[in-house]
Length: 221
Image 1 (cartoon, rainbow, N blue to C red):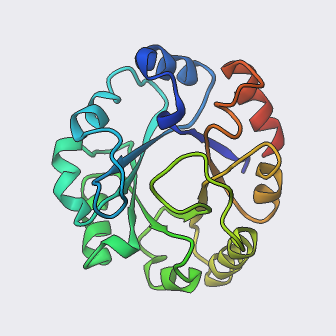
Image 2: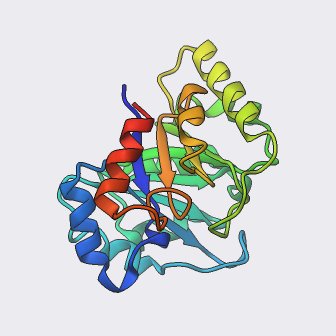
Image 3: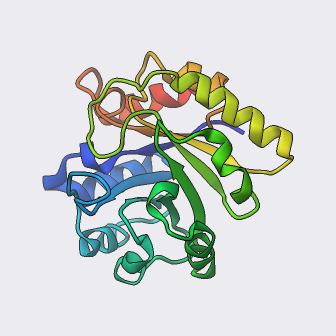
């Protein structure tokens, strides 16, 4: 399976968001990464639930990849209108009962994913592998764009890939944080499947968006 792309909408042209989503859709991009923050689990706020809901309107083939950085994430599901076709990540560190939250996501027809921050051992996801579509491995600390990669991120990625492969489960790995031109190929070779691309690659200043998307895919084949 070739690597899949999930551009971070937080880094997009927010004044022309609808046309930006349509352009990504036309380029064959699989996902749109939407960060939602509650200013409690992480000290920041991005889009409100209504904005997350409205982003679905201009989408044709592209899917919402909703990354919820919030305590009690299930309280936001109805307002976001989470449903079939969505991929939804919740943080293990933010859930009182992650099993119940993942079950709620799956019950709505969406793909349930579990996110872990850089300080959370990768082994902590083992008991959830039967319940998730993907593990979202944070390679920066959640809450802010433009950070350098956290130490030992590649080592953690290799360890997570090995853990999943040895389990025999069909679970993807998504990487989020400083997924740069310099790092994306190495991430791919170390087991990443889905790439959250932002200011250090697809939304950088080196290439127009269409050229950046094509270049990124060539690096994660």
